[in-house]
Amino acid sequence: MANACVDYANREIALGTSGKFDKEDFTLAVQPFFRDITTPPMKDGKINMKFFAPDCFHFSQWGHGIVSTWLWKNILEPVDKKTTQGDLTNPAIPLACPDPVL
Image (cartoon, rainbow, N blue to C red; front, top):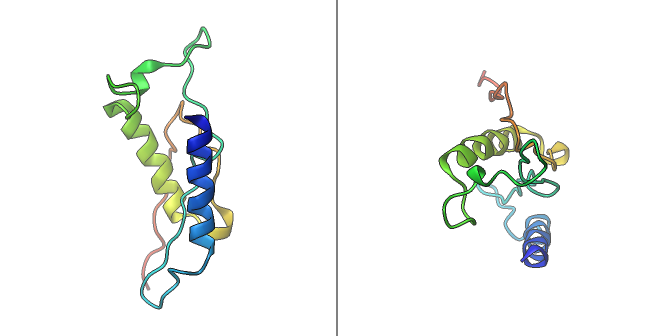
């Protein structure tokens, strides 16, 4: 499963950098904060399964809350300076704000 996730991420990056979707009114920008993450550990070093839903694949409400802060951070970062290693133990606080429209 890990290899499939890495392969998917690599193909997503290749598609995003291909220029195929670079239009005047649209583009594809990959949000790579998942590239170098590890799941949040408990004090004993084991994976904190509360981060995941009962199916052990999707995020729980707590997991979604943390992931959403890292996604928001990634969206607001310049394309060439995006975070690739989100610390899913903690939310990305303070939340970034978009530049005001002048």
